[in-house]
Length: 100
Image (cartoon, rainbow, N blue to C red):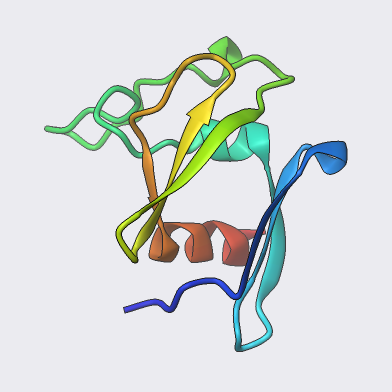
């Protein structure tokens, strides 16, 4: 199980989330990149695992309008395009952060 980030901040001027973990791993993940990586069933085919979201359909100026925690394991984001069904687990965010 991946631990909860020690820092999770939406930095609007950078258009990115700033994340850090206690082991020193830190990263900024752009709002656009995170929205395009949404793992929900509307963005990823549940049966095949194939991405069905067209990244070009995501506005370049996408931004979070609301943030909430889902239990102790994930971040729920409501995006400026109205999308709000993705749950970004700490493990998922850590993998994105590590991938650069």
